[in-house]
Every structure is written in C-alpha cells, then in structure tokens.
Length: 307
Image (tube, rainbow, N blue to C red):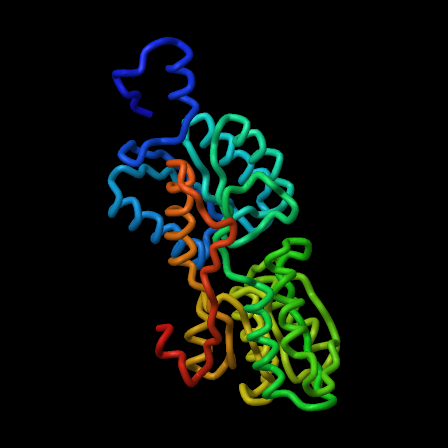
C-alpha cells in the first residue's frame, strides 16, 4: 500500500500500514473456487472481467481438485497469504477450512465467502451467494405441479453437511409441502459429481421400478441421472427429472427433453459481486453482510433465455 509522503514518525507509519487501502491504491486479492466445473469456471471468468475493467485490482486464482478437496483448498489459502494478498474471495469446500481463514484474518486479510456459507463463522466480511433455501423451494414448487398423490421421489444430495447443498434439499421439501402426497424413497449422496450421479440414480431406479421423479441438488448429478434413466430404457416422459445449477450440460438436457427443469444460479454475478464486495471491504467501505445473487427456474418454456 502506498503511504502519503506527509506522514512521518514510526507510530504514524504503523497506523498508516494497518489502515484500509485508499480508493486510489492498487488492491491484490485471491480468488479460490471449489473444483473444475462450468459453474466455477464462469465465476472465475467474471472475476477476470472485473480485473480487466479495474486495472488497479490484481487477482491471483486458485481452484481445488474436487468438491471434497479440503486439504487442497487450505493449501491455496495459505499460499495466497504468503503471496501478500489483502483479501480472499472463496467458495469454501467445507466448514473445516475456517481455521485456515482465521489465520488469514490474523494476518490482516479480509474474507468474502461466495456460493457457500460457513454457518456461525464470524470472520467473513460478506457472503455473496444464492439463497439456496429459497432457490430449492422453486424446485419443490415445480414438482408440486407435476406430481400426484402416491408418486415416489428420489433425491440425489450433493455433499451432506455442506450448508448450501443441504439447503437446496430442505428448500425443495418445503416447496413441495402442501401439495400431493409424495413418498420420498431415497436420499443418495453424490459429492456433486456426474459419475456418482449415475450410480446413485441407478440405485434409486433399481430399488424403485415405479419411481416417478428424481431431484438432484447439483448440476453434474442431474446429468448423471439423465444418463441412468436413458441406460435403463425409461422414456423421457415417464419420469420427472429436476436439477439445480443449470450447468454442465443441463440446458442441453432440457432442450432434448431428458431433464424437465433446473434451478439456475447466476455464477457470473456471484463472481463479480464477490470480488467487488471484497475490494470495497479492503478499501474501508461498509458492505452488506449478505449479497443475494438470485436464482430462477429453467424449463422447456424459457430455456432459450438461458442458452
């Protein structure tokens, strides 16, 4: 950080070094996403566009290897601290990365969480995210309109214990409540991967030959479920498939009729607002604790708006 030349004295120098960056000062931040899928790539591209439009902002990028790569994400946090960033915008892979973020805060670094929250962790300057509970309700409200009494529903969870992903399931169940009497016949974990989505959906279909609907809390497992349905020789109109994320090929699946609906987040907005909020926090501005980046339901009727 540049110091004003009129400041003299050791105490004044120390106070200047500890204070927020001036609005004209360059800012160096880290940007960490979970793992290499389209959703997080879109977030990173938005951050890069922000940096291009704001040449006073330097961004260092990092990404984990998978949705459960806790150690990899901790290593990225520690690396960015040693590289002298003033803030980190991060999609935390798991609440257990909080101690590494605490150490970053002790070094004077601001933290903005994106996509996923760390419940009860007080260190964040802000959270830029979809309201996953309300977004999940959109899926449940859609299912309420297409299912009837006695129908069965299987759920493909993301990573159980990750609050944002759990909220997508509890929100869906809330949206479904008050509608037809639907029986939940299984909840299978997928780690938000397409491969586990295939096998988890196959298990649901094998155990429940008359399964009427599948809800997937992440995009890759939704695509995996569509593969499992196709492999089982089940017609598109015989089972309702609803996903979440509108990523990783889901839009194409809706166009082809293999997927009925998905909840779209806005990852570009998440990346852009995450970075902008972090920069403003570093510069001493007041920022909102929760930055809601919105969500929408994609169906065959409006899918062209998302292509």
